[in-house]
Image (tube, rainbow, N blue to C red; front, side, top):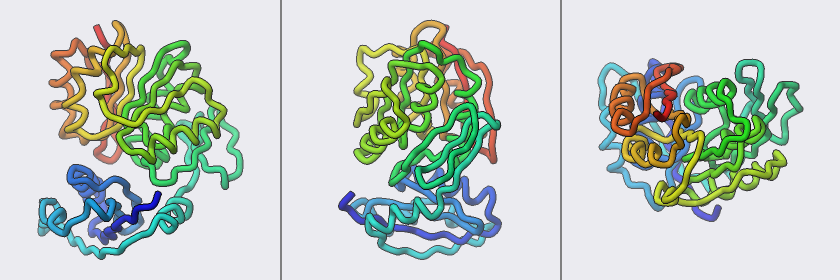
Length: 278
């Protein structure tokens, strides 16, 4: 990518739940990627979208019960990729699924996903991606059509194909996610993943057996009715990208779409929820 990014480096005391809450609020105002640190958080936004007033709109920063300090730096594309490579460590989910980069040693698990994350969200480290991987491991995907909405690196679509799913549409609004998903699908020898750049407007006349969407609360609530239209009867919808306190709002948005609540997972105040189409 040719455009530079603005990095905001936060030091947080106490770290939790400050890091998770701050990440959610910053995503709402346009920050695209995050790196969680032992003592804080790095947040990134394209330089062209940055303005100082964005931080003034984040109410959490003003909360007196937390010690929040931050610095700002411009990061060029080369340094951005170096940040990912230096921070990206392999993970294993439920001893069944490993996510690693090309520069890591192979990991002997039932499913091994190899990704080059670049500027895309979805390495498995964040609580939401981790829970989505966990749900996919426990969901019957064999022979089923799949939509991965907000695909990021394409890691969820890749696991879906490795579990026998297909065809699979992987959609993200960001061009580098579209490109990164294509690269990662090729890296994993995937044949059934079709990467698309765009939003939910691409879903007209589409039908799926399984829909997975790891985005944020506002986008999910806006698009849930469309997901329902696209989901075949007895199909599965798995959502994440929101907090425990948001679960009721997500459930209420599903009611009108004939989507029945099945279960949910929680990890450090983040939630993934599973629904079934009547």
